[in-house]
Structures are given as C-alpha cells and as structure tokens.
Image 1 (tube, rainbow, N blue to C red):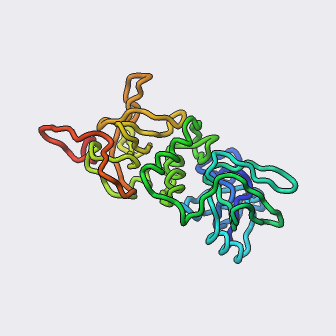
Image 2: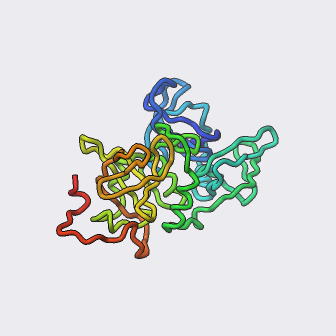
Image 3: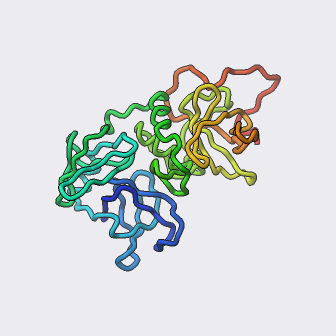
Length: 281
C-alpha cells in the first residue's frame, strides 16, 4: 500500500477529480492518507486513515511517504492545540490549524521532506489526551464563531460532522465523518433529560434522515454549527433559536461516548408517561 502526508495547512477533498466538484472533507497538515487510484498525474483518490473517508485530492497537495516514514509518523506525532499557529522553516512560515498533526515531533521541531519545521505553540501527544466532558467542552468552545463550510474541518470553515469529529479527535475518540454515520457510535441515551454535558445530539430532517449534530452543554444548551459554531437552547423537541423564536433542528436521539459523572444537562422532570428519545419522532 502507498501512503502520503498533507504538507499544506488545509487541503480540500472532493467528490470527483475536478476543482469544480463538491468538497466533501478536508485534510489538515500532517494527516496521512492511503493512495487508492490515480486520474492522470493530477488527481488521486485517497482514503483518510483516521475516518476511512474516501475522496479525491490534488496530487501536488500531498507528499508520498516511504514505508519507514509512514510507520514513524503513524506511531509518533502530536496535535496542534492552538486555533492557528505558525510552522517556521528556513524558507517560509506556514500557519496550521487546531487538530493538525506534527509528525515525529520532539516538543520543539520535526523533519519532513528535507526540511526542518519549528513549532512553538500548544501541542499534545495522543497518550496525554483526556476524554472528559470538561475537556470536550473546552475544545468545542475554541471553535466558537468558526463559519459554516460544507466539508470543512478547520476554524476557517467547518460543517456539523467536521466540528464534532475534530473536537472528539482532540480527546482521543475517533468519530466517522458525517452525522448519519456518527449516530451509530456510542451508547444510546433514552431521554434528553438524562443526557450529560459532552454527549452528542443528532437531528433529523422532515424525511427522517440524520443531517445534523452537536455537543450538549450544561443548562439545556448545545454547541453546534449553523451558519457558524454557536450555542443555542435545546429540549426534547430540538434546537431552539432565540433570535428567530423557532425550532431550527428536530431532535432524533442522543448518544454517549464519554465516561460521565452524574450531572445531567437538565434536571429530570416528572411526567405521566415518557417515551424513549428514539421513539419521539
């Protein structure tokens, strides 16, 4: 198998080998892909090694890896924790976003493709990631006001599935790329009143398809991507937009991926009869 590494800040992944085709995801600096199929010398179909997303990338926006580089960079790396932080080389300065990977990072620098890169920002090694509700919420709030962009995974543009995927990636939990695939991960939460901060909420369209997701916060709120990463109210009906005084997303189900302490998002309310959240719609 052949592999390559993204050597630019943010690179689009497209549905077909054309700059005019839909962006379905993005590569961040340092992420590794498997090379599957070539279209001439310009485009290559890739499989992202962290979520199995398959799409097309411009061949010159990724660098091939030797087998020894692939092994080393897969086993030894750190994540960038700053929203954006410059990588400095002798010839240039390149900003990289939160969640980018620093291959073979020694705490100050790394080498790749004949260049030495210096990095002075916040970084974390995978073995030091903390999968706690507090950590999830702290990272999620770093993305506040990031604009919506279909297929985006960076603070300069991110979609709903990309947002939850990146947040959980930075606590050591791998999520699939899109809400309709992410919803199959984790433990079902029967009632929204039993949900905890850090749980994931999933929302459906009028046809019943899962199209949106967000991360639950304390006090009956959710952080999600709608026009921008924002915080709104949520209840058993869905997300309520106070600016427009209407529900914008209809809740389908909540899922849990974190080990939780007993501190519910909303206090349990007494009702005559309750249905499991999955059966509400």
